[in-house]
Length: 339
Image (cartoon, rainbow, N blue to C red):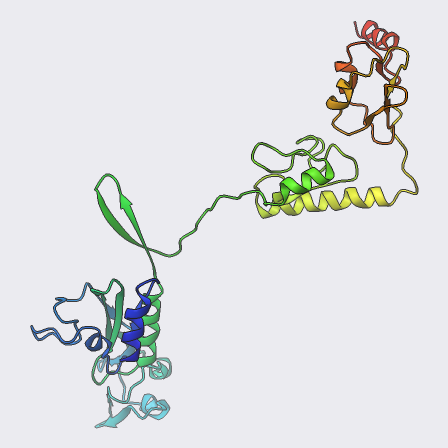
């Protein structure tokens, strides 16, 4: 009674499956609704018949072909349940003692004994008026193997049932599935915005971190010394995440293994006589490598941060910013050589 009350109580806000594992004397259906007035036992009152009945074949019983039997008696001697007796030099099987172990089939020299599957119970399923299903099992009288019947009951109760609205039919469809694989959306972490502001990193429009270059520098940021991998960048599977983690670790080892760091020889430089202090290059620099000297009124380059991308030179209206080793004369010489 306690189980039935708890099942009805929990069914109000949880998914509940009522399971009656007393295969010898199932009675949970009685507590959940009574006995059907039509006389069918173990059916909830007013619920009609069971929705589904599943036969349980959990044991086997030997059958003897007396045309092949030579009456040697080996089967009776080796039956540990004493289910076989020799009567008039013929083996007789007591079905109430036989456990279907198969020893007699194995020991018979004439192959006169064969095990045949026997239905020793059944499982019944019914969706109750309380909104949850009842799974009950019954071991047939005189049959053995109640434990196997209980295992079948649990297996049936654990089956995944998927209910969904079918728009074409306009009805709710219920399907039995081996497994339900959900694919929820992978969202960026809430802390990405704050971390990006702290480290001066770029985010994509979806909120993930933006790598320096997806093909050639997939784990690097535009700022040197900061690396990323896995779901920090965008959704990917576990093998991709592991590969990127190994790549990021290798980049860190390479960086820390150096005795000292050398700045790139290709950095921007400012001609102080041409610079007007408009600060357009400061806004264009993705590395924060440019600051304004308030005393002189010009922009200066922090060479340790400059990556030589050339964005500042592209936006400078006065031509005061140039890339070192990429003067106009050098560029024109490379163009002439290429032509």
